[in-house]
Image 1 (cartoon, rainbow over the protein chains, first blue to last red):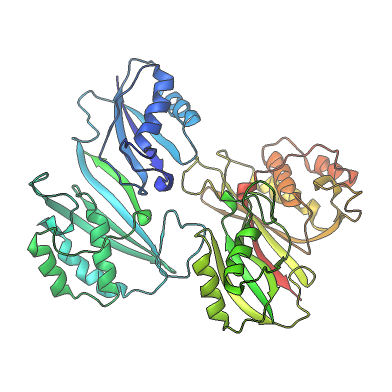
Image 2: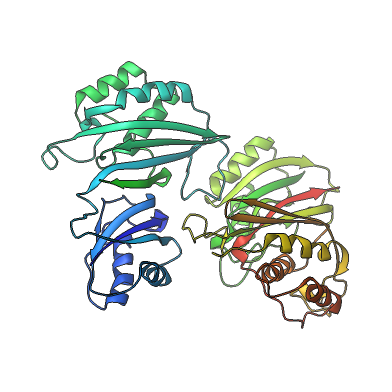
Length: 244
Length: 244
């Protein structure tokens, strides 16, 4: 039986989704909990990795099992074995051709930034930026990224490893509530560090350090050697993974 | 010169305000930062202690110094030496007769509780309770605590140590936003564990385990041997200290 799990996590304490030599990963922590239930090593497949310090409301992974348990019992069993900063949100029985990674339709990422005075309650999940940005200008320049582009300039991965760096961004939505700014990115997929590099670039726009023309040139260069600023991991959350 | 400082902290990592033998305290962390500026050991006086794991938006402390620096420079200097989970909010020069503890007029505490599914983003600052409470009943029974009472039943301190356990609660305010419940307590002062014991008792009311009559009897017993439930520290925040 194939199981689809939706999981929320605060990535602050973790070295990212993927198992690493040093540091504790989200995946290893879930593997361990699952292994206690199944008594056998389990293989879990996520929609994609998240980097060290990045969070998720709705990361999705799947695994196969022969254990016969209801969806709610799976949810409770896993949550009873997981730490407070990793919480299963939903368990669904799915068809055998569902694949957490290959069946993805769209992903939604959200970046959170505090323009006000640094506060100690959300430093793990909100970038404590501490200054006022020109949001209107940022929104205007963000249009440059919409649609299908080769995002090699905003990628941490060399073309030799990932030759096709074309991605399609459907929407970029700015929201502001008092000092908290959030920028949501909706697209078919994202390259490693891509959202953080786009946000870093937009912050420079909001600081008056980059113009729309310059950002266009950066994108059109399709070259990861172009100097870009990467916004801190703590502000980034994988909000939702949509499936076909 | 006497300096009044308002500080916000996430108490999750700390053993409380007061210096302890084991664990890092908020006070010791601030002392250390202050010592780096003044180059001499400083004595800081808080409005009162907060327990291990308890937070503050607006804890207040004072100290005396001969260093000549503007208020904003003091704030920036201290924040540059403090960790992300302790942030000075305000520095004010005050008269020499101001005392962070003895000049207190009222204090406001707020308890945060999540009635919905446990979520991993606020587990440090919101009690992840996970069930629905009868808030109306809780609000009704909370009236019992209003006004001046001997709160010995809801105190962690023996009468031999603190003989006068009479406190005056001015207001108890319930707020609900989706699943998040907050209960605010405003009063002249609070005994050790008092707010958490009142909240623990109100939760039992909301679960249908205690009636208004039973809570009245508990209060009137004025006896810390009466069995009470203490709500977890993580949900409690010292919101504001008001001065004469």
